[in-house]
Image (cartoon, rainbow, N blue to C red; front, side, top):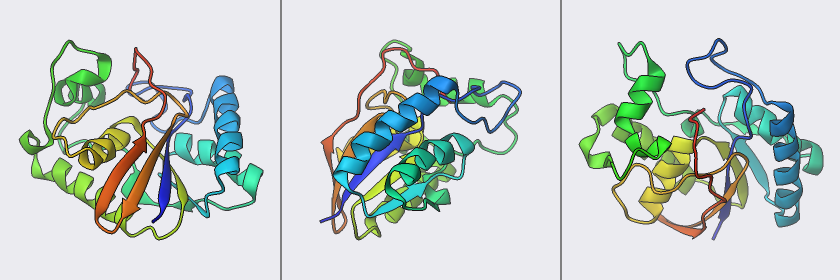
Length: 192
């Protein structure tokens, strides 16, 4: 049974709505990535997969340096897609996923979202189920929640608040996904 280590990217140099739509990491982010890489190297994943976004690729690069494994870019683990016609992604994220910023007890459910978002989640879950060896997967806040909620058989879109460079552990047994451990959380989340 493969064990998957799901890592939220380290601290990015910009957040959504700022000038750079695909930022790299800050100096703190580089340090977070190096710390996560040391922890992950001890777990000996056989593969590294990464979202194509620069903040994930740079976070994964620290593990590449530590282990000598080259990350495979996997679009299925990319950022949640913004629907066509949405000009302000940040506002859309806050409205669609109100719990990301700790907006009270407001919870959105996957079954209440559009087919495009449900299809994105289904593609990501299908990609996880094809992994046949232990792997480190570098991804994003909403993606981690999409995975964790499915693995916990919950419909809420936000089930935890993964900190930058936190490591969530998931076991895959055929079609069955199980959270072995959620990664460290942050109380105040800035979606990036």
